[in-house]
Image (cartoon, rainbow, N blue to C red; front, top):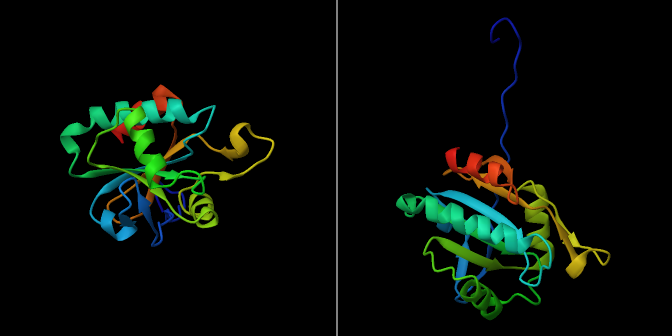
Length: 168
């Protein structure tokens, strides 16, 4: 009871174990993020619509949180891993001038990544022949706490939402 009203416990979704290859062809595991705050997005390198804006907003966010670099991990999961292997992810980072040490670009099994996004990161990601680029996905950034629980989902194309994520 709070102020005479019955309230339930908040149950935050948790992120299960996952692994994939990063832009340097190194295996990255969810357990590598233990003790860090994560900010994750789902994208693909040939996305003709929202991905470039999302990447730019993540770059700005990463720069504004640079003093917390050792505490925050940025993770960008490709939803098109058949195309976006480590070499392509590395080129994408170079093209966007991303050199942050706390930002991993991850490729895994396509179905696993889509399922991880939908069931755990609270975003949508999937093949869609009708969508530009052949994939549809939400433009969200997911905030995950140090224990691996989702604490918020923010519209990554909206500067106000990104600012809110920065202060949360």
